[in-house]
Image (cartoon, rainbow, N blue to C red):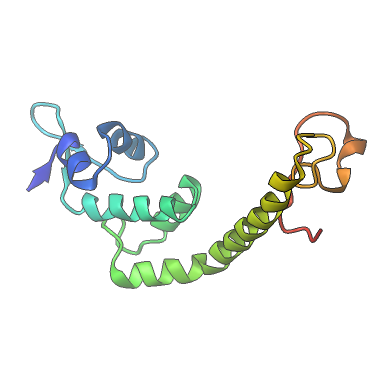
Length: 147
């Protein structure tokens, strides 16, 4: 049984525009029926679920696309073995993300208490003013730097 964009979206719990976006990014594929309507194989539901879970843990669409390209069976949904292999590969990246968030939370608690409201001297936003010599503009926040 093939599914329409609306059916995939409803069953995956996303908007139809998300399904079209994932297709435009090459994360999922469809084909056109004789009425030129987009149709998806049912296996796309597992693939969309995989994308949603990967996004929920903070992976970028680029990282997700790279992971999907490693699947040995092409456009099919990831299997349990695929998911295990990919999750193991992502573990260090997720551990780093957890550490970044932990340190950000710890610094944010202190920042809320200080009340300085100064982007120039804020230890969270501008730690040690390391980039001042580069001039004004965007700054690089390194949440893993010890205070």
